[in-house]
Length: 305
Ligand SMILES: [Zn+2]
Image 1 (cartoon, rainbow, N blue to C red):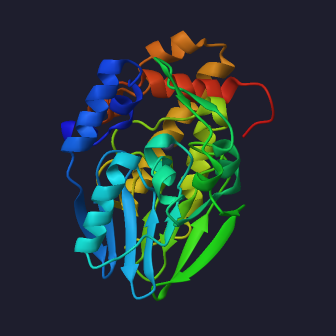
Image 2: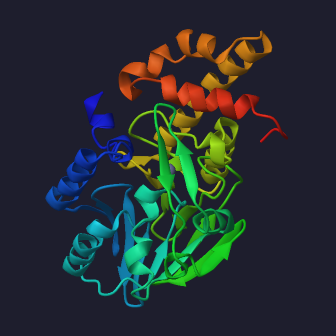
């Protein structure tokens, strides 16, 4: 239970509203050593503070997926140098949330090309509020030099360090602008926060995310993978496609249970109190915020996601 959850940093980060919490966060950045896990020849995953980073390091240079926080960038650069890389040529934002993209604020001005799905760039151009149920977190618009210079709608392909690298978008999911990144020759996919393997997923329902969208996005990715694909979640340990299939099955079951309750006229409070996630709570923790965001995404006005 703890193993799945201890790597989940967003909530610790998100409470940084007081001076003390800000100090705690800075201390956490200062104390954190980057650890790395090799997932292929020239392909590594870096863990620090914030979302997991994939790094392709090879003859053409360095491409990373997700960039954590400004305070982590020197440590990330040092880790990449230790793995044989140099400057970071490309940084792909899996989505716009600060704990995966604030590193743009350093990398962009220093010359890294930043890439994202179009909706994530659009969101980064304006001030955002992330509603986490028990609190909300403001994320200010990024300056122009920290914004993605290259965007895509549904699909784009890099040919870099000897392999095709596909950026895929299957509609709104965790946010409205998620990208999964598939390293084709290595058979590795980085899922961003569409796949949270450190608890229940957070759904940014106030900014276009939805439970149905997360399920559909994961199903889209699974069609691009096979039994041997290595799956890198936004948070939590690296796993295989079976774990992603299990995650989809869990979310689909929960979705159907919520849907049945909604059609019976259940309120949010009734859904949260009904124990409909009981078989997964020991592993994934308190479901209240997840159920809140799921219910919200399933009952908000407008076209079904
Ligand atoms: Zn996120």
